[in-house]
Image 1 (cartoon, rainbow, N blue to C red):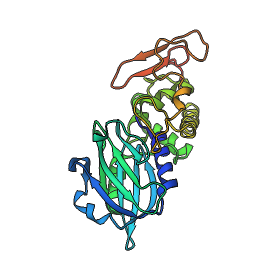
Image 2: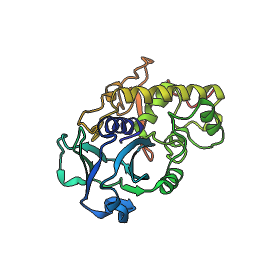
Image 3: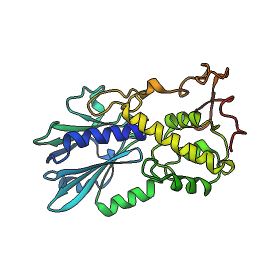
Image 4: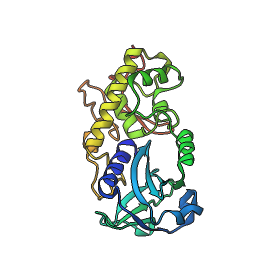
Length: 279
């Protein structure tokens, strides 16, 4: 948390309020929050924000100065947030970076990250390309159905870990993997190689539906996620299985939502998500 829908919401709000704004200054409270490119920090003041893009669970801010592009890539990680100055912040000591803008709807964008699993990277275009190639696989909302089918046909292993493998499919984490698989009627531990093309196509369609619906709802504020303007994501009200162990299956099949412990918790209904259901 945050995952792809939350990162998309963040990128959209920043784009709507800060695109085109000049950056007047950058304050960094601790140098170790910048994973790469700290020595280039002095370049950014005087540049203008000309692009805001989401890559997986990260948000990339593109700045231009004297026709040169450089980027600030924010990893949201487990607890990272990008917040406007107008948003009240719990534990302000965890605001590690402030970007000050002039002539904009919001005078300041802050990077708040108490657990510091995420970092910022300051990159030129070549560095950004290397960063993207190293960290992100297929984007679920940019890939075609055929791209998705071909990808899964080339892989082995259990389905849920594959959906969450960022170098294979970028942006899906534990919340949305559970919700997608339940709606698709697929067991988290089913072997990818056993899935028919029809089941993979259905999985693709449901994956896109869930992610788009979550974005429209502002994401899921399960623990610490807030959009830059401080609003909470409401898609958590539409979760069918995530965090609902012991509750009756919402499909009214008579089953109960089970929780399986692994590297990450899996929630499913064994009646609706049989390991034998692959065709």
